[in-house]
Each structure stands twice: as C-alpha cells, then as structure tokens.
Image (tube, rainbow, N blue to C red; front, top):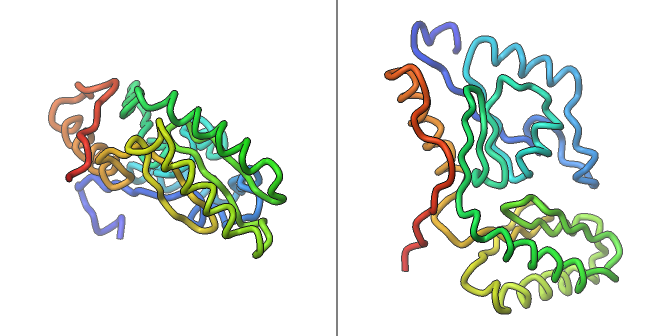
Length: 207
C-alpha cells in the first residue's frame, strides 16, 4: 500500500495497548518488544507515524523510544512531535483530575487487584484483576465520585477493556487529535513549518 502511494504523504496512526503491545494484566508491564520497535521504526522511515493512546504522553514515549514519531497521549489531550510540536488541551482541569485520582485511590484502597493510574489528562481505574464479586462496587465508587463536586460536570466517564476512565468533559478525543495532526501536517507541507503551538481551550460539549 505504501508503494502505491507514490508522491503522496502517508500518515499512519497507531494505538498502543492492543495494537503495538498485547493487553496485559499489569498496565506498567505493557512494554514494546524490540521486534515491534524495529517494525515501527522501519515504517517511520517510509511514512509519518503517530501513536495515539489513552496513556500519559511521557509514559508513552518511554515505552516506544522512537523520537521521530508524533505522540498523542491522554486520549489526544497532550500532543508532541518533531519540530518542537507541543499542544495541550484544557490544562485548567488538571487539579480536578488530580483530586479525582486521590479520591478514587482512597475509596478503592481496600479492593484487591484494583489499579488507579494517573495519565495526567485522565484517570484510569483498572479492574481486570478485581474479583467478580467486587466489580460492581468498583463501578459504584467510580459513578459516586463522578457525581461529587467538583467532578460533576467537569469530568465524564469512558469505558475500555476492563478499565473506567475519567476525562475532561470537553469536545476533544483521539479522533479530534488525529484531525488536528493531519491539519498541522498539511500546513507544514504547504508552509514548511508549524505555526501553531501551545494550549487550546477545547469547546464545551453540545447541550
């Protein structure tokens, strides 16, 4: 397919967990194999490659260890890449997310197998290793915390593979991050450099 692209720029967007690495019981153990790293590096030599993940951006970079790639962490809320690209969305919500992380960690501290992960622009509650009889309680706690001040109306719930994710309740996600990167790459092609960096306040969700 890359050979058929001719002179066109090819951009490849990859997820991390479940795509570059298998889903594992311990999120911290989802390291990239040397074989996969070599394959992605080879691909990056023929196309522009971006990794878009729910994981925190710096953590994602430390796993992949390929500086030539673009990285969109925390579901696209934190983006960086070659040429000094740096773009973050809704930094004002970070104290609320940190408070939610602490609240969830406190309330779920006695649940065996639970994992509360700080992804900077999101908080993940991993319940894959929680026993079946405790899983309804985990969901109850997550929903209770979301209903409390200051989290109600500021954060929203996402659900993944054995994970609950609390994210800023704004109109931004992995898809928006992909569109943002595509537009920047088109602009770079036209103008030779990036013109837009820094923080963006994402619009509120529709009523």
